[in-house]
Image (cartoon, one colour):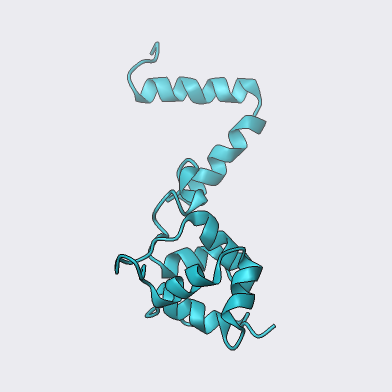
Length: 135
């Protein structure tokens, strides 16, 4: 395959430029077929605009997943390049509790494995903090 799998600088690239860079010398039809999209849609994505309306394209998260998979490119970096890193519709990590605080998120994920007695202690502390405790 002709597409590139190494790390590239995408800071100043729009989606179209990034897709062209990733595709390298692979044919448009072959690349689109691997992605499961039409070659005309891939061509529009590479031009960054809808040829019918002249407006910027906003591919779905599923389409971006297909592109990332086809090019073996990190999905997170792809959504960052297209400006959707902080959009929960595109970044599933943001749908998790405490997405912007990894330490708290990691702690929160351990709660289901805690003993009931320990969770009751946490609840008591929470109630005291919020003025609902017996003390």
